[in-house]
Length: 85
Image 1 (cartoon, one colour):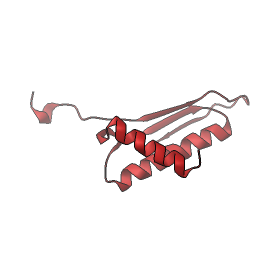
Image 2 (image 1 turned 180 degrees about the vertical axis):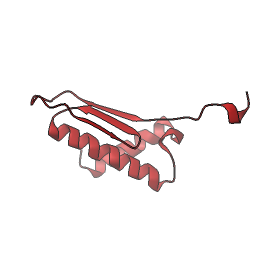
Image 3 (image 1 turned 60 degrees about the vertical axis):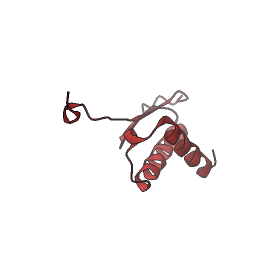
Image 4 (image 1 turned 30 degrees about the vertical axis):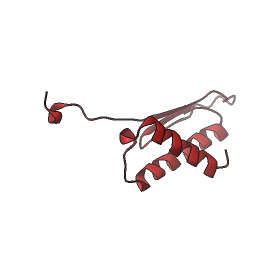
């Protein structure tokens, strides 16, 4: 199999919140992420975090699927620190 025939790598982040008690079903999809559930506050935090991670990856001129697990972990830590979490 030639390299051109190999499937292109893809990656996505999945956020799941379990603390909703208001009966609302929350689902948000964005670039490289899907978020499901959570209270309004939790869902907002997940959304903000996913967006910041994407911004960081874009600033580095990379794609999510090109990062190693260690690189993604470092970005997540930097985003978490910057958001005060």
